[in-house]
Amino acid sequence: MISMNPKIWLSSPHMGGTELNYIHGAFEENWVAPLGPNVNGLEQDLGRYLAAEEGRQLHIAALSSGTAALHLALISLGVKAGDEVICQSMTFSASANPIAYQGATPVFVDSEPETWNMCPRALRAAVEGRIAERGEKPKAIIVVHLYGMPAKMEEIVAVADEFGIPVIEDAAEALGSKYRGRACGTFGRYGVLSFNGNKIITTSGGGALVCHSAEDKSHAIFLATQARDDAPHYQHSQIGYNYRMSNICAGIGRGQMEVLDERVAARRGMTEFYRDLLQDVPGVRILVAPNADFFSNHWLAAVLIDPLEAGGRTREGLRMAFLEDNIESRPLWKPMHLQPIFEAAPYYGASGLNAGQIAEGLFENGLCLPSGSNLGEDDRSRIAAILEEFFGLNSGG
Image 1 (cartoon, rainbow, N blue to C red):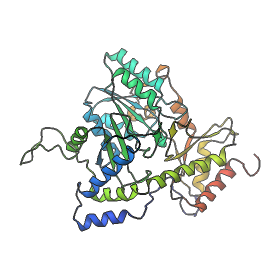
Image 2: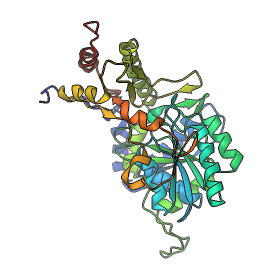
Image 3: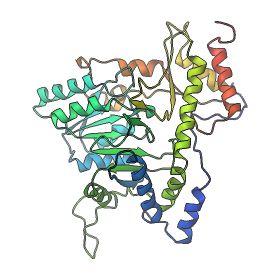
Image 4: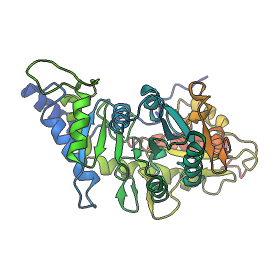
């Protein structure tokens, strides 16, 4: 039976307080359409934030979702029916679905054990394997910064550059994360951000496409606003989409940007909370940065539990213990190559086709823990009590 205690969510929205100022401004000025000062302002805020330490100019297109951003990136790179696109297998389905939107085939790649992200060796095996089988290289590579942990971008970009394949960074979970001091989402030809309700900041629903040129941004916005030609009447020479963010949602985002660094600090604090509590428990590993090159926003804290070392305790046992106290937790993403919809897609590990089980092990033994930036001391106490009882921390067992 589930406890009557108040619900502790995995990752709930956390307002900063100034969002209403921007929303009221939009109403007062009658800017309630998918354009307006808040849209422009949010794009500028994001561009400055992501390029703060780079001395470069980024061009951001605010859109209706991160999925829309990924879809437009694929379209802009010319991905079409019959093409192949390499995609990290350990991710949410939104990373892979836009490949199918284009009638292309995803080629899934296994993870490496340090960051749980795309394995550079498996990436090379996939590229070489597809060239050998098809006589042509994949059209793009989609790498994901899982749970806010940066992927090994230097090694991944090196492989992509060697074969001349553009990279799309799915940084939907990684706003505020950095690799070697550079913001995630700025390494690839395109970057993708998400502002869904459970993300580190939210616009209730929304996303953004990170571009490196004004031309790329302009083309993305053209496609996102129904691809209307420059004519006095409605004329369309390309298929367009209704993917632009509204000025109201962008107003929420502007308020959220004011507290982004605070949200990152709070999420990182939750991971440290779990790390301190569980660091001496056999068979338990919290996802943390491999070294100083990686700065994670720790959007979601995540734990691996090895039943053989943890006295038979499992991730599912912990999930149910949390559930009984009305605390939400969630298994790690089920890898895409295990999903029924993609079961026929090629899959590569570091040793080649169909050889890679890191992602499968992560799914089997991994759990996302409550990570919201709005969790208080009472919430932490309830979470700690469950963990202490489950792992026998108070009894020495």
